[in-house]
Length: 298
Image (cartoon, rainbow, N blue to C red; front, side, top):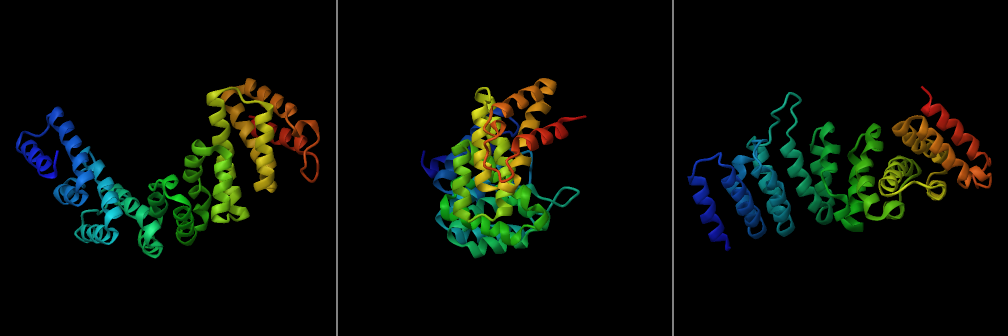
């Protein structure tokens, strides 16, 4: 259907009684097609629906801003700023947070990170402190590419409060592990020239996500633990003991005493358990068992 045919069909639906499930589903399908052809028109036509969190159609509109920003980021940013000034995105909850504002900012900034990093930094700085991390988490990190990823982390470093840095890396790692496991996280560290502290933040989540993915597909083996320990030694040796114990403890917590027995068996079969690990004090096996016991004890 052409743009004119789509708008004519949408006009007919708008003239019918609202609340019919079939009409609402058809409207959502037609709006999705309109966004692909003319995202600016879709936003202009349905901007009054953004403020209704129960409106399924409104959930599609951030993607319209994203598509518009791909074509004309300046115009898309001007439209969003205008709507903000008009009060469209004022918080309607007790804490004053407007989820729609966060979603639209994420859509726009995903493009600005590739075209105008300074503009993205300014927009993020203008948000209240407690909404900055939420906005960044709304951006699909894996879609950014090397330059966009670096820009994303640069913005994160500049604007996120120090005590939020650790959790700010969680959504990044959660996206990277399914795409390429620990190797993808290693690549990410190289792209952003990660500090030792940042590697530690990300390694915690990476180890947990990695083992969970393995356990979902098959039984975890001692070799899996060996590979994880080797990876931890390369990227955050000072945290290798603690993170290894934590991953095993998570398994134990999910399976009770049987989980502790399994975790201990894995450790004894691993390279660490054979007393030939390259940790400087040579006592990783003892340390991990001690940590595992401490973490899983009542």
